[in-house]
Image 1 (cartoon, one colour):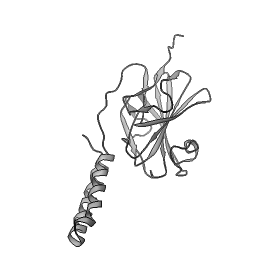
Image 2 (image 1 turned 30 degrees about the vertical axis):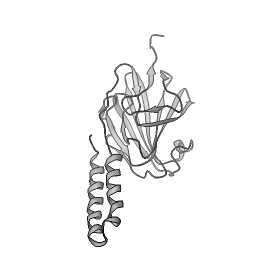
Image 3 (image 1 turned 90 degrees about the vertical axis):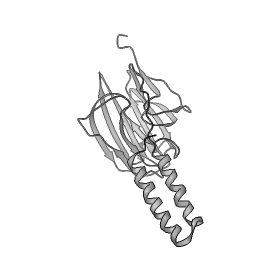
Image 4 (image 1 turned 180 degrees about the vertical axis):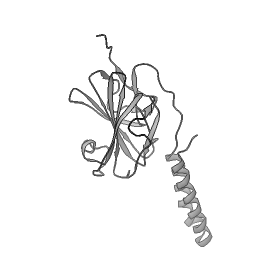
Length: 204
C-alpha cells in the first residue's frame, strides 16, 4: 500500500531514535519507539480508490458523517476523522480551484458542531460544470497541521488527492441547491469512492 512520504520520514526518525535508546538502555525502553513507527506508517497510508462516474460528488475524507444541515440555500455535510482513518483528502468534484483560503482558529474537538465555524481551517472553493462546491479541511484537538497541495487556478479531477490533515480532524462540504445529499449522519464514508451527493436533473 502507498504511504504518504511524511509518514515514512516520521517512521525512520522514530526507528533511529529507537535504535539509540536500545543501545543505551535496552529493548524494553526502545519498544515504544518501534510501536510509534509502525503507527505512523499505518496512519499515513494512502490507498487507491475507485472513483464513481456520473453527476455525483464524492467524500473528501474517510470517516463518519456527523452532520447534514441546511445552510442558506444549500446544505453543509460534516465528516469526522479519528486517528485510525485515512487522512488523505480528495476533491469532492472535478473542476477549477477558484480560491484557497487559510483561516486561523481554535483547536476544539473536531466532532463538535462549533468547530465548523471556530477551528483553524483551510477553505477550498472548486468550480465545476455549472456548480460550485466549497470544501473545508478543519483542524481538531490533536490535528495541528493542515496540508493542501493545490492553489487557485489548478484543475482537479473528482476524487483527486489534494492534501491531508495530520491526526484526528474534520472535513466540511458545502453544496448548493442543485445537489441532493446522499448520506445521513452516522454513516461511514471513504474518500474518493463514497458518493455523498447527487446532482439534480438540470432539466427539472
